[in-house]
Length: 97
Image 1 (cartoon, helix red, strand yellow):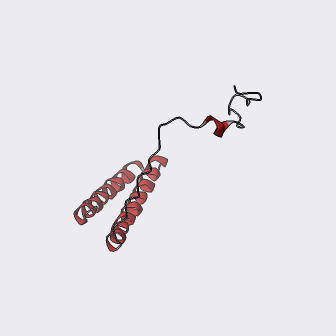
Image 2 (cartoon, one colour; image 1 turned 135 degrees about the vertical axis):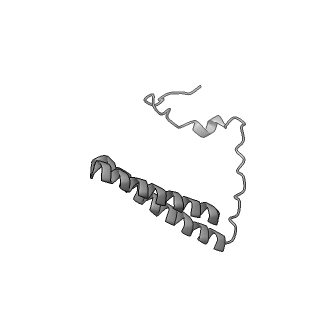
Image 3 (cartoon, one colour; image 1 turned 45 degrees about the vertical axis):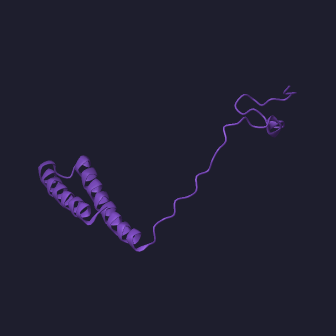
């Protein structure tokens, strides 16, 4: 997030805080209002964590992109599963051929 986006997020949270205070005055301390207050607190915590994560990310070196792992689509060697049970159907106890 850019600095402008973080500032916009904080302004939005402030506006929401003002709205929740109005709702609390109108509806009192009901369970629904307490959940809204809890959600607002969570948003404030998450926004603060995002702002600090952004600072840490800028200070560190860019992350390396891991190499792609190629998974072949060729059939597996059947000998690899010769002594394995078939899960989910009670196992297979006999000759597979």
